[in-house]
Image (cartoon, rainbow, N blue to C red; front, side, top):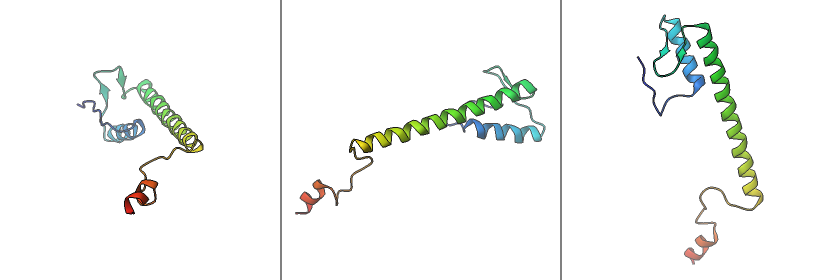
Length: 94
């Protein structure tokens, strides 16, 4: 028996874990969703969900990179400022 966790692994990690369990003769059936890894349909669904999860991560990564590039093109400093090389730091050191 398993219980969902907000700190659960990624879908690909879950699929690998479920495959390892299947090799040991342990089947997985979700009691809270219509998800049965003991059937070909359930395994196909898991594969599709893993593919969509990977796609979503890639899209988020691309959007993040685009946002960072846009911020840099506008001259926005990302991350924390280095107090020793910033204008504030030079005033504090005087």
